[in-house]
Length: 519
Ligand code: BGC
Image (cartoon, rainbow, N blue to C red; front, side, top):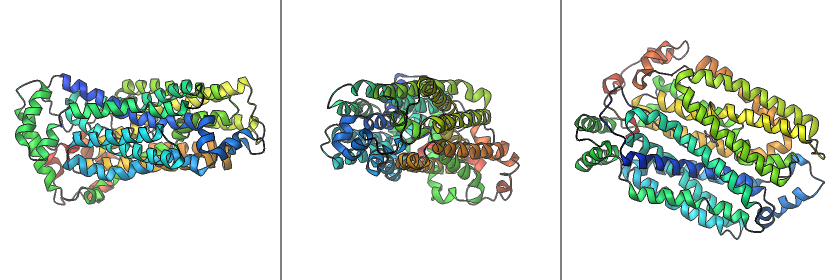
């Protein structure tokens, strides 16, 4: 999730469940929640490279793109322009805290509805924007939508899905994010040809996933977990029967009731998270989010058209190339769905590390040689090399750090901290997404081609981190992580040694505690 990972099955028990229409609707929900987030990620870069948009809101930047005096690398270096992109993530991370409350108290469905309404108002403000204030206000509202949706949608899905398809749904959410990005890139490609108001159409089309999410939230029922958690036991039971398509739901129902009882015993989930025995998972979740953003992926996702035009690609070619990288992103995420449980997490992360490192070094060398401050004529051959290398980089990211940055935290936290851990994961991700969005164009101006060396340095550091500190979690049942993973790990095992019972016996509750309902 991107904006939020799915929490996988809570135990080895498999309850009777059919794939009912309501479960299919829940998949469509995943699509719209993920699409909405992805569309917002992808749309800003294309729009900010459109002349009409720049003339209206950022005339200073527009003049720089036309003038010869400024360094090529600095054409788009403008705090306001970066704020247009980044304000969404800042608002999103703030909203996560409120969303965590509403998901628990008001339910998943109402929270998704709130998200949809934020999205719709945000889209209207953006598409109708008359000045910068309106534009930024719209982005902030979209950000609030992202905060609420990324908390509630993954949660809703993981609770409504039968256990056996939860893991797949996890990466499906990420897949939809990438489809949203691609969709935005394609829309930008066409709207850039419309004189005057093309950017309005680009920003306005975000209304499609926004309206779908809102209608979806009105149509679906809340999850049984949430209903039971809020004391509506009979309603919860009826919904469970409906979504599982069978009358034999008693065992699962009892588990949910027990889960909600146990959850109420954990008075301070966030404080619990800071306990020594939860340190490994916390460190890994936070580090994975920081590293995921420090690969530089969003420099490409947000600013690909701007980046390509900085390198001397003409408008059309810039947007066209962004469509290519967007498509590579989608296809490589599909690859990940197939191989993640066969090859394992570590192999994917390490292979991708090598691939991303090499691609970034080659890009830096080509740009270092060919793009100077005042000459940006890459020439076709070199332009092709740059695009191929960017695709090489994006594909590596998309089958590793993209989905795994979300999957690993969601499967390694023990039950009592899984939900709080998930909130922290989403927040750290949005925080660092904000930092990259706000800083990238200025960094490009100051570091020039060295920006790619900077990111490659991070890739090296994160790969070393993976070699030593990220254990393999492939095929390990989620409730056996402590015994089979952490207690066996050369470094992390020392945090498990003083495994004192601080008011909560882990294993005793393992089978009956549904973590995702307790954010
Ligand atoms: C990241 C996003 C990124 C996307 C690209 C996600 O996993 O969290 O920040 O834009 O991947 O596909």
